[in-house]
Structures are given as C-alpha cells and as structure tokens.
Length: 115
Image (cartoon, rainbow, N blue to C red; front, side, top):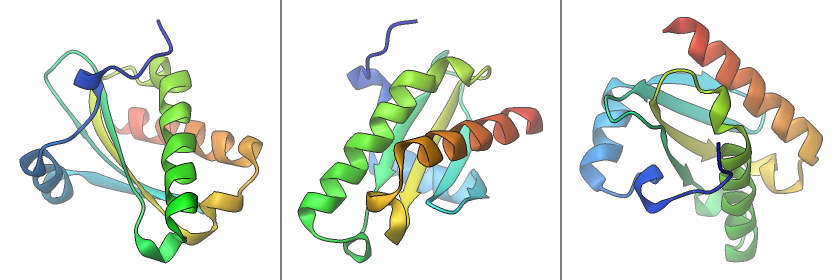
C-alpha cells in the first residue's frame, strides 16, 4: 500500500466532522484523542485537530504533520475502512516519535478489535 495521503483520504467537510463527533467512538490516550467510526467508502479517511491550547502556530503545524505521517505509514493496520479524527493534547508536540507511534498503533489495534 502506498504511503501517501491522497485528497480523498482527508476529512474536510463540516458535515463529516459533525457526524463523526456525534456517532464516533472515542479512544483517549496520553497524547491525543482518536474519534472513529466505520465508513462505507472502501478506504479510511483522517483529520487532525490542534487547538490553540496545544501551542503556537508552528507547534500546531508540527503536530498535524506528525499525526498525518503516522496515519500515512500505518493506514494498512486499519482492517476496516474508517473515518478518524485525532484531537491533539498539549504534550504531543514534544512527545518522542517512538512513544507517539506506539500509542497510535495501540489505539488502532483497540479500535479495530471493537468492530
């Protein structure tokens, strides 16, 4: 599976965000909250939310880049096509890459077992 994040794999519409916030299940981790819900598109979609509480614009953009990279590299672990929103917590910008990847994979494993 290619390690790219195509435009169709991004959640952009407000209706999609609202539906996911209402219907989705939540995984609460140390660095982020992951909201997930299966979709019928045949591929997974992803979005990152980083509020001003997480830091300056530079830190927020770094957080979004890191989370998108995690999704790109590990989207093959999602057995069921899903919509995912990652809501960043304050400590994510300074988190070690190894810890972040471990938590993301753990979250994906827990999420896929539920469906």
